[in-house]
Image (cartoon, rainbow, N blue to C red; front, side):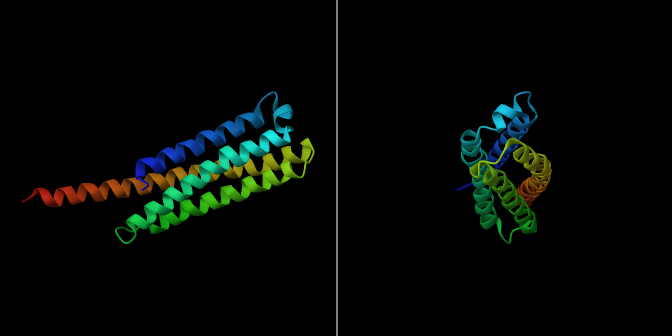
Length: 149
């Protein structure tokens, strides 16, 4: 059973992992790191996509748990869509690694996809904060309703 805190932990993990990926892209040794096809493919599959999938699963569980209680089903759907988009962008990068593309092609793909991934993560964080606010507000309203007896 996923809770709001679990989902937030997964979101922080995704943010940190993508930040790490961006640091690898922008580092002085980026050519050496990015041209290591097997290692980067394993890193993208094992670390980044795994965390995105765990976040998506936790959000789906939370959505199912809170469906009909408040009007943020669209907020959950938006975050889940962002998770799917991030997975697709990571698959694009990983496809180049599996095809053993040269460094220039990989760098161009990173240059195109990484800002989109970072932008989607910012949107995910904003949507998650909206959901978190609605869930905590709902809890406080319920507590206020029961205190007047």
